[in-house]
Length: 431
Image (cartoon, rainbow, N blue to C red; front, side, top):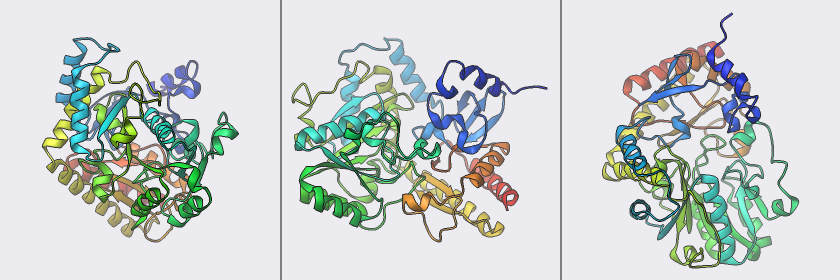
């Protein structure tokens, strides 16, 4: 019996890596499958170590908006690496990227580079607490802001996938300072502020939730958060690690015309390399050391490879805004095709989309999924079957019902057409 190379490698990995993976969702547990190990990728195509090639709609969980191995980004990385991979000292490219981010996101007066989205959100929250002198934070059920202790309270993404409402190791003292509200339920936020307003340092929110599946903000929701935070003197933090530079040049805040106090970024600004950043109003950011007293540091912050890749990626997006029109058009075709297939087959499901982010929820709710509670009614077993059928048809989707499909510029109309056909075949078998 020939055992696939991916399975051999997974068996090898579990002997040295907890669970065999370095990020839980990669284990494919929620889709009742064994993970595939990737060899290489180019454009919209990804190839595993068994030689199987798939059209990739994960895009490294969002950042590869121009596709895999995009040549200008690869060239920028190679040129940067030839000069040295890390200095632990200032470089010119850090200022270049910071200035470009400021230009594209007007709410950001200054920006601090870090090495991951988790580090960005963790640091932004500490900064908000230092700025306000308060301790509590409001977060939303199903929104995932990385694995910092303060955020692993009814988090989304892999925590949902593994069925963990929170995480062992998070202390009671930390948990008590995290106040939970319901996404798209402004009244739940108002109640928290009416009781704890003078102790709340910040509201942190994914302006489009991407870690309970794509869930869009309802009319007036983000505006209401802006007004509440202003009324009570709290800092409004938009976690745009996923949406930043994907929904629009200026991210979700441009897309919805709402200005936060602080913004956290990641993924895209590294061109696919490890990175994070947080920035916002000058009077808040100046609280950071060495100018202020809120401490945060990192040897690899502003790493020259990530800076070079990120600058090349963002510069292309900034100079070619028609890319967003192209992404919208392709995503709309895919959405329409899937909805038509649902009508043809009679399968009960809901499609949520914001720009080039999309989720197909196997859920009998009428209309759209608008909350964590709605998302949790999805049929994860049916999604697991759908995922495996899609993989067999050469379509690589997120191995979790509660993640996003990402469309990149590299996806051709032929890729989109193939995905719609594969979707129909999978739905027909799931009836």
